Image (cartoon, rainbow, N blue to C red):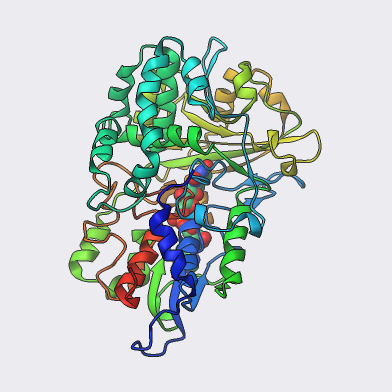
Length: 499
Ligand SMILES: Cc1cc2nc3c(=O)[nH]c(=O)nc-3n(C[C@H](O)[C@H](O)[C@H](O)COP(=O)(O)OP(=O)(O)OC[C@H]3O[C@@H](n4cnc5c(N)ncnc54)[C@H](O)[C@@H]3O)c2cc1C
């Protein structure tokens, strides 16, 4: 797929032209980036490509933010600590321009992107082929083709508008057509379908929005995830999501960029001098680090920024693959456990209302089925989480395992070891996960394009030279680097006279 690259290629063509910064006084660095998640690294790379002198400072001993892999359970079992499956890994317009394979990144394509089992032993399945996916939905075949066909056809034109800040659209008619479906609550869009399979599949996709499916624009994430399943696949990085971070970091340093790990920034006064600072953190942390630099209006806006539900996560070491009843689930990288749309709607409504669902919607990944590097020979890993109220410390292990057992009898007997994270432990692990919110703030219609504040540019703070580049800016959560890309573009334009 070749999307949005015109603009990006233009930026890259400038790679060999030195930036005119002579008028700026000497500083230790041109730009400092605080935080090395996908957005921090994407921003740092774009700026370093422009021959600026860029330093990335990361609190932890390793780079990557949400892209890290570790032996959480037993020796030899490699678990993705946060991000596991990457629908926008190959679909990110910025990542597409980077030579990440030369820096060790290898994408693996599961046989089936995502499967969605039901209690009768059948499953709906999202595959690379839109025709096969539609055909598996029986009476909803044509409705599925009518819904997803235009999104796939128009994606190259739509991607820059959807994966960026609110601006005058480059393709207003195509965007308007997408918006007619995307802005609807998923519960409304599901009325296009008549079968349990199609309604359930759509609801599982929309539940990635981590909010009630009756909210406006919950259909947007479903359409983007399904379209990217057909276009680029829900890919798995060989060796774990740490491989994406390692490749981004390796490319950045090959350009001359510098990385300092193990340094937690509590105040902006700790930073070396620079012309710009980009923060890969969320508004709450930004206020703590640099709040005294901001106007009272901007501070007021950041204080009102809203975080969403949290997640409870489990990783398992298994002595065999998960024995799912439905064949599609045994061939899928991702499995959505939630059965009917009614059950998923109730689950998402419960966590948004401060309750814990008895049968929560569970997102499960089984990377080792496709990547033998993840576990000792013959053994397996699995990764899963469900949504819980923000800040919840309830242990959801048994409830999640019951949901897996429901669709895969015998699963519990295959568990060798487990590791869990409640919302507080997730936030301790990465301070960006406020109350366990993995998207850097709720992505509802009010915060979709205006995150973190309603401004001409959401990336620019009220203080000259200070920018925010995390998933708390458009387009929001996920491993795609587009928040960092757009923030870096803004820095180049504002401070270095580059378009
Ligand atoms: C359990 C879980 C599952 C997920 N699954 C997926 C998935 O399958 N697919 C997907 O695409 N996305 C997934 N995500 C979401 C994805 O990981 C995030 O949206 C993404 O990492 C956000 O990138 P970011 O660069 O904005 O911030 P982050 O990745 O959070 O990086 C921020 C970095 O800044 C550092 N930092 C923070 N504060 C400071 C400070 N004061 N000083 C110095 N450094 C600091 C942190 O240590 C961290 O390294 C998941 C997240 C979680 C937690």
